[in-house]
Length: 198
Length: 256
Image (cartoon, rainbow over all chains, first blue to last red; front, side):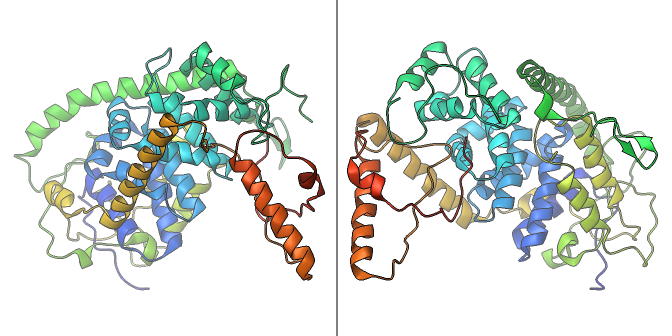
């Protein structure tokens, strides 16, 4: 491939990000899509890019990509959202765009990194000490976090614990813990302490 | 890995989230939020000023003094001219107006740099990452500069106008969102029906051909019974469940 890139060196940050977004939309190559999304997710870490990312609707692009079949794209998209959630304007946008259910779905992913990013993103969208969006502290979510708090993965355990302590009220946690504790469905919660990890 | 010998020296590991305590993780997240709040607050002042200046500005650029190189932008005539760096595996030329281009630029660089950005030790996209990811990000953006001549470019407003969200996907997402809302409404109305399960699922029992009609019939009956039980109230089923020959699930979900 001998094409010369036709990009002006004077193009600023917005143009660069625009080029990435355009490529993501136009390319047929899965590998290229993954690389572009990885870069966008990394750029989403820097607050300097936030206004451009909002302008280019990259938040929607990330939310969109959560429904992709390709697990790698989902992982990178939720990673990008996790990075973005630290900012208040981004948070508002994601909440209004109905991002919570999409992110909650990622809690069921087989990829640990996706789950970690999803938990962190939910915390980013919430308000510590109460006042979180009701979808964030819905019973299935709290139950899921209770199970995660018993995980063998230290990272997941820590994040889940912080979620339960800082973003859920004690009554929400107690209710989730006691709800259908004897159910055959899912993994029953232990009555006493967490089991010893191997 | 920390303090391990490596080619005559010692490795010093400074990022190991699996060894953090809950408090350390909490503190890290709080610091991240504080940092972003600080940066966006400062940026609001900067951007307001920049918008005033950029309107009169054409054809010039700054690389050293300004964090955001001012754009010298012309109308683009067609979208086919826009570079697709990852598809064509050619590096981009951004940010550094003083870089010179050479035709012998390594075509693998963008792949490598984005590979770095993607595979940086699991640091992608997680707000646990602090300096390592920021450095990686800057490296990704700066190292992928090609040394090329001036090309066509976009004006900021046209850049925005040309971007069209993928309508099909957005519609699909909207449809799913509506479905989820409906499902939630149903859930709130009657929680005795199927409850939404979030998080790791029990492995799905795959259909196995027992190579015998009667065995297959029995297996199907048992499978259907299990489905019935799983979807109904939480009364553990009786004998038949224990008799199920559970084969290894095809796709293991992460277990706690």
